[in-house]
Image (cartoon, rainbow, N blue to C red):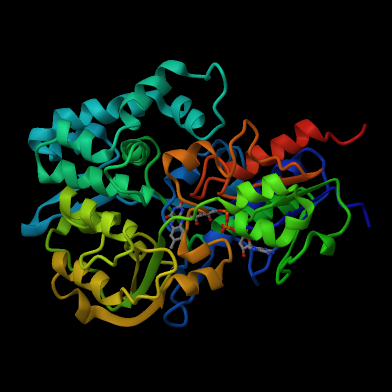
Length: 476
Ligand SMILES: Cc1cc2nc3c(=O)[nH]c(=O)nc-3n(C[C@H](O)[C@H](O)[C@H](O)COP(=O)(O)OP(=O)(O)OC[C@H]3O[C@@H](n4cnc5c(N)ncnc54)[C@H](O)[C@@H]3O)c2cc1C
């Protein structure tokens, strides 16, 4: 048996990309995964009915397409096919209106009426900067930065609260609501610094690369990553939870696709006290309540254009979405939560038998919440699609405890590996130029608790593996 050069704990997208990056450089790598299947947040399962596939966690992947790490891999040779809906995103409003984010900035602006020009002005520079800007945003900040003009132009507006940017630029409910929904992916108060940046980035990516999903379910992202890894000689062992570094085979490097709380549980004894205390102070963000539905027809949206989009943001106007997110941050459960919904079977007939449709939905809740948000989520959908409830044939729900049981990285239901506010954007999980590197010899962090944070992009794993290659090159 060849000697193992690196062990990666956790087969999420970051762990798998870290493994692939090392295997590409000739390392012999082993990935140990606690769950029965690889993929972490990109797993799919028959949650409601036999033969009906649901994405348990991630469903929509603009970051996957934009990521320099994933772009560089031959994932399509290993079965991954991105499916693009006609429209990346729809945002319905009371009274039958809706804002639509099209691939084209011009078409989107046309639909926003009086706010069309303001939307163009906000988003067009991001789209024009293309991968120069997104590659910079997904990479560690260098001094000087690689594309200073693009970054500065984005940063001046992006650092601001979404509420302020929208108030100054938009007058219509359509543009305000659209921007609020985009910014609310941050899981922060929309009055907080940097939330405008989330809105600009996700909106800009809708134009730049689209908001695609993976044919057959997000599991095929994980499976294609495993395929690439195995083609390079690496291997993944599932049903292998790691409780201590002592259990691991000897290796030059160990990379943990874990969040700080688990890092302390698994490796705390190997870490200097000062660093361990800093990890202990790391903050987790709100959790999510997840609802998966099997339906015996497509969702009957009042505005039929909403059916052209795979992703639908449900929450109404900017003030309403901002209030719902503020409730969550104050430890309350909003009566009218902001709901993120995907309707994959409208664009992918491989996920369910003919005539059966699925809905993937979640809303934000306080960290550790035990509340059942099925009724508030369904009321929000019904509000924009009367008669939707009559179509539900099966439900599957996951409160924060079930989320964490599914994947130990979702501490208290936090799907981003830690709060993504400005402070933890800079110090993720600790302040330093190389946050993937721990003070323990050969021990690295590669989860979404390191830059650039949550989402299926694999960039945390890519940066961590590149640190390993730089610091510990294989002899010869
Ligand atoms: C409901 C929901 C919706 C989401 N929607 C999207 C979306 O649409 N688009 C998007 O880009 N992102 C989305 N995300 C976020 C995305 O899934 C995560 O940001 C991403 O998966 C993080 O990748 P990771 O590799 O850091 O960690 P994870 O994917 O969480 O992987 C960590 C892995 O480590 C394993 N593990 C944990 N502890 C141990 C241990 N002790 N020993 C061995 N293995 C262990 C876990 O089982 C898991 O497989 C969503 C997440 C959720 C939950």
